[in-house]
Amino acid sequence: YRTIGLIGAMNEEIELLIKHMEDVKETEIAGIVYRQGRFCGRDVVVCRSGVGKVNAAVCTQILLDRFAADAVIFTGVAGALDPALNIGDIVVSTECMQHDMDVTALGFARGVIPYEKTSVFAADAALLDLAWASSEKLFPGRTKRGRVLSGDQFIASRSTVRQLHDELQGACTEMEGAAVAQVCAMNGVPYVVIRSMSDKADGSAHVNFAEFTVMAAENSYRIVEDMVKRL
Ligand code: ADE
Image 1 (cartoon, rainbow, N blue to C red):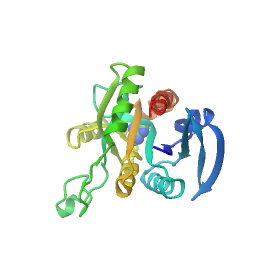
Image 2: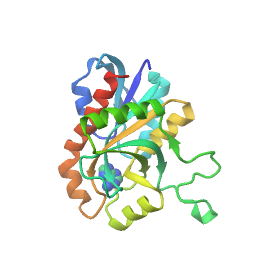
Image 3: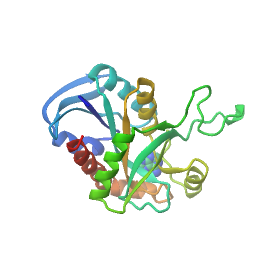
Image 4: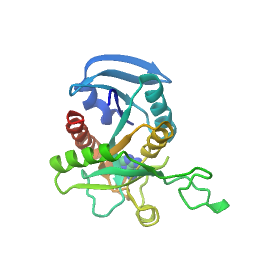
């Protein structure tokens, strides 16, 4: 890869990347600041998409069009759906899907985008293997490969967690991954999402999110750092 795009949704998710970058040049497009520079000896572009799928989609398309990113890594925090995951644990995306895409009234299954050839966007196998290896090295026994479910909702209910896990087979839930994944798929660019759990998307999620986001964002950063060194 010549230029690696690194995206986080919130400040906490990109601040360590920015801190460790060199030769930084900033450009603002559509209200998003793109930081081109060097990170772990590689050419990267770091950006904060903002929260939600629209922000993530716009951010990603600009990253590909204007900064010629030829690989995209998303780093950040998520709510756990798999009951085996604890706060701080890691999910590396095998694939991403929008859990809030709902055209069931017309007979489409939940999560299915009508008339598209797929609604489940597979991560790049090579990026996934690298992310998995880095995560298992740094956080042994605390990493799962799985489906990342994205929606424009902060999930904070046990019953929703059970539904997203049982019906849509999600390992974790967040608000950007599937948008990044879909834009990458539409452009033929490889991607992977790395998420560390800030909460369990249950009744304590808002408290846990506030307490554990910095720690979880750092876990995800450390995986990206280790991974980029071996790209
Ligand atoms: N990001 C972190 N925790 C989340 C949750 N519970 N729902 C949606 N996005 C999240």
